[in-house]
Image 1 (cartoon, helix red, strand yellow):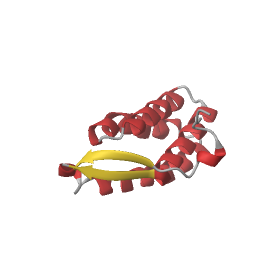
Image 2 (cartoon, rainbow, N blue to C red; image 1 turned 180 degrees about the vertical axis):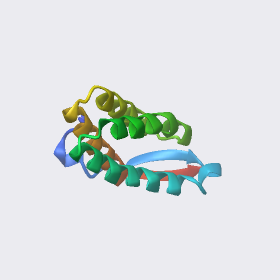
Image 3 (cartoon, helix red, strand yellow; image 1 turned 180 degrees about the horizontal axis):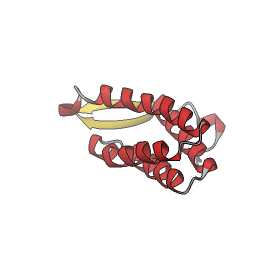
Image 4 (tube, one colour; image 1 turned 120 degrees about the vertical axis):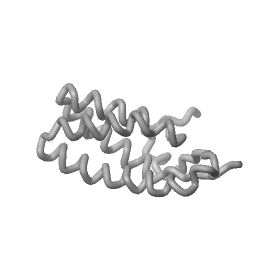
Length: 111
């Protein structure tokens, strides 16, 4: 059958992203910073700091695709929108999606 993103049994599958080898020096740091965003987002959501969620989402939306992580652009856009509209469920979903993505993404550098 067709795989759905929300199937629990698929949760461990790697998401392979091919990235230009010219970016090899900066991509690990970029992903580390997104892991830092996770912590900041958790705190922001707990304290109802919607503006921080919006800003983190906006930045991620703007940078993700440039590094080759289109899914981070999508997650960022959803976080930005949720922060803007003070949508707590949307923010928590964005946090969950970001966490899952970061734990599963595997970068392959290509020439």
